[in-house]
Structure formats: C-alpha cells, structure tokens
Amino acid sequence: MTIPTTTTLDGPGGIFVDAAAYADPPAWHAKADALRAADPVHRIEIDGFMPFYAVTRHADVFEIERQPERFQNTLQSVLFPNAFYDRQLATGLIIKSLVHMDGHEHREYRKLTNDWFKPANLRKVIEKRVNGLAREFVDRMMERGPECDFAREIGLLFPLHVIMSILGVPEPDEPMMLRLTQELFASEDPEFGDGDGLEVIVNASRMFFEYFNDLTDDRRKTPADDIATVLSTATIDDAPIGDIERIGYYMIVATAGHDTTSNSINGGLEALIRHPDQLRALQDDPSRIDRAVDEIIRWSTPVRHFLRHATEDYQLAGVEIRQGEAVLLSYLSANRDDSVFERPHAFDITRENAADHLAFGTGVHFCLGAHLARMELRAFFRELLPRLESIELTGEPENCVSHFVGGIKNLPVRYALRPAT
Image (cartoon, rainbow, N blue to C red):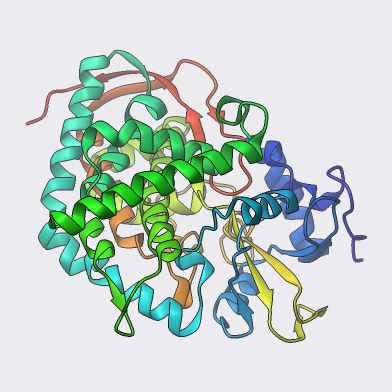
C-alpha cells in the first residue's frame, strides 16, 4: 500500500529533509527500510523546500543515474531550503561545479582534471606521498596516545592534507579550508552553523570565492605543478573558463576531496572497533583490505544524496514523474538495499559485492576522486592495522547534523600502537 505524501518532518519522508535525522543512523535506516519496502519513490512536499520524490532503492537510483539526458543536474542539485537559493541569487554567490553540469559542458569541464585522478597517474604522482602521509598521521596518533578524538585529530586531517597538496593550497591555510568545508556541508549542525545556517553557507561561499580568486591570480603569475594552475589557465572551446565555473571547480575539489574520505575513515574505524573479530581478520590477512575498503565506503556513504530534475515525463517503479519535477537520489538508502546486499545492516569486510555500492554514483557522474579516496583508505588502514595492538571506544561517537555530506565528527578512543617498522 502506498504511503501518503509526506508534508511534515514527522512524516515518513521527513528523514530526507531533517538534518538532525541523519545524526541517528539506526533510526534513519529503520525509516528508510520501511519506505523502500512500501513506497520506494516517495513524494515529499514540505513547506520551504521544493517538492521532490525520494528514490530509495538501489535499482531505481542506478536507473536514473544512467540516464543523464532524462534526469539532469541544475544549479539546484542539492536539497537546500528555497530561502538558500533565493539568497544565493540575491548575493550573486552562484556555485556551479561538475555536480551542476551535464552533457557537453560536463564532459569538457571534467576533462580538465580527469588525467590527474586516473589510477595510473595517482600511482605515479601521488601514491608514495599518500603512503608517507599515512605513516606520518599514524605516528601522530601514537604520539598523542593513549587516547585521542580520532575523528578530529587524525581522520579529518589526513585526507585534508592529501587533497590540499594536490590542489595547491599551502599547508598553513588547511585549517581554514576545513572550517569552511564544515560550514558549507554541515551548516545545520549547531557546532558549525551558529544559528543562521543559511547565512553561514553564504559567508563560507564568499570566503571561498575570495580565497580562490587570489589563488588564481597567484598561479597565473607563478605556475606550479598543481590543479590550481590547471584551473587558473584552463580553456574550453578555445575560451577561458568562466569565473563562476572555475571557483565552483576549486570548491568541489577542496571540499568533497577530503570531507567524504574523512567520513569514510572515521566510519570505518568505528565499525572495526565495534566488530573486533573483523578487525583481527584484517590484521591477520592484510590482503582483505581492498574489499574491506569498499565495505567501509558502502557502510559510511558520506554523500547522502543528490537531486536530479526530469526533462520529460517518466515512469519510475510505477510512479509517474512529470517533466521539471525533482528526484532525490538517496545513496544512503540504496547502499542498504537488501535486494542487492545480503544482511545490509551488517558490517562485513568479506562481502563479495561490496563494490556494487553507489556511494560514488555511477555513469557519467561517477565521482572524479573515487580512485584517490580508495587509495587513501587503503594506505591509512594498511599503515594503522599492523601497528595496532588494541583499541576501544571511550565514549559514544557523535554524528554530524547534515542532510548532504556527513558522518562521525567525534570518535573518542583509547589505544596502543607499535612504532613503524
């Protein structure tokens, strides 16, 4: 029986709008499970937000992702309140990145940095550096032991340093990049939002604009071997790329390039602590780490959703979606779909089809940094696990209040580590 349209946060589809719901993963997944079973393409009409359909099954998300000509990205590719988009237009701080593009435009902009993120280039240019940084951060963890907040002191900072070195942001500016990312992606969280979440996002966007405009000017005068130089001098169709597109490109690399990986590392370590038998299995057989990394990513799913907009009438799972209507692709729900993943709420490092997760999307919008993210997770856990003698939680982990990108923001642990060999 179809569930009625959700019109309030208390309704079954309110979990996609209410950022606080994501901070309680078990409760969130219980409601998502019910929707997948009863109404997998669920209509949501909540005041202050555009109406949309929440797409919760793996197969349906996959079906939409593979048809970018029928379900397109727009400048409203993330579920924010209407007031945010109104204020964005009023201030002129338009963000346009790869996640807002389709067709020829998307292909050409993606080409600008595609070679940087190909596996062969990553192995050649950055893998040794990533492995060295993994050792450096595990050493840092040992120095700060026997206790630390792993998420804040290690998990957030390791991927941040990796992507900033690729982008070309000086190390002293990394704390600012972290703060702005948290304000942009988690403005609903009281720790980062400071009351007016919309104003926080606008101010963070303004600071990103100012910073990357200055970086562009610097790289045009003094080129370097980094992505900032590529973007500062890039042309498409024999014309310089636009200011809005260039700044948007900087922002998506600078923010998603570390925040999503951080959330996977933090979520993965928490899962291993709660499943000591699997932690020991990885320590006994490090060859399992590759498959374990995909299970960690499936389990964590840092990017909760993206929006697409129908360019024509389309029937999805028996539901008629009209031209112009929005669909929310719930990656977090799709990655717990029991029609694809056996015992989906079990963390299992031996899961044979863990790589079938949709955390990176699929099709033409498959995440540009997916190979780098996997490389970082492999490097970190290959360094940590052989040196880890013991580890336990010293408090309950705390999840970020965010409906877009999120995960564990506090992970207090007690541990013992061996020196590197």
